[in-house]
Amino acid sequence: MCKNATSTAASLMNTVEPMIINLLTLEGLATTPDGVAAINAFNAAKTALSNWTSGSTATVVVETMNAFTAVFQTLPLPADAKGLESVILAIIESIIGVLTANSPAPAPVTTEIVSASTEEIQAAHVNTVVNDTTAKVTTLLPEFKRSIWKSASHQAKDEWNKAVAKSDTKYSVLKVA
Image 1: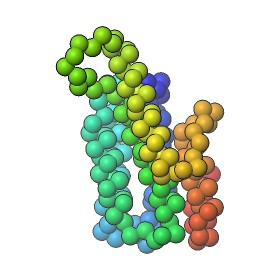
Image 2 (image 1 turned 45 degrees about the horizontal axis):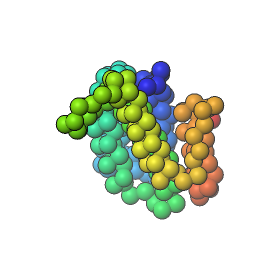
Image 3 (image 1 turned 90 degrees about the vertical axis):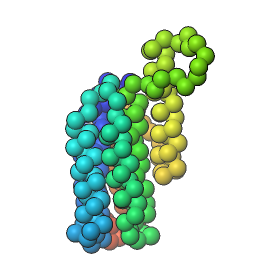
Image 4 (image 1 turned 60 degrees about the vertical axis):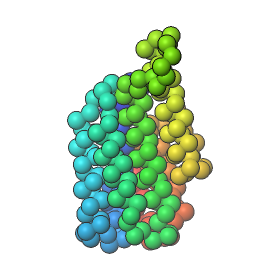
């Protein structure tokens, strides 16, 4: 489990929020019904996250994150913004991964006697979640390489700025510091 799961997830939420708002504003979607629905869904996820503590189940937070993702993916973003959309979705997947890995492991689904300790079951759960999250992020951002030397938030900003640089020049105003 991550020692700073709550702060890592919150930091990623704070990092992705202006990316979402600024992209929707630039595309003229922030004040449309769909854009408002996406922003409201994000705010609901952020509120749910603020009520979560590491080690407790994150079901409600993950559900709100998935609700945001579902709404966000329906937005009529132009094709030249798909790289930026992928970064946002990858950050959300990363947050879900942090939350899930730092929630209690689900009960074993087997009826066989499990000889593993609680700690071993939790470690296996974390390993599974990390592998699943890595696969999802890599699908969205094939060139992404996770670093143990940079914070998750810093890596998110780096990926965003790479996507901005690869996108149409109209998106250059979206670069983050």
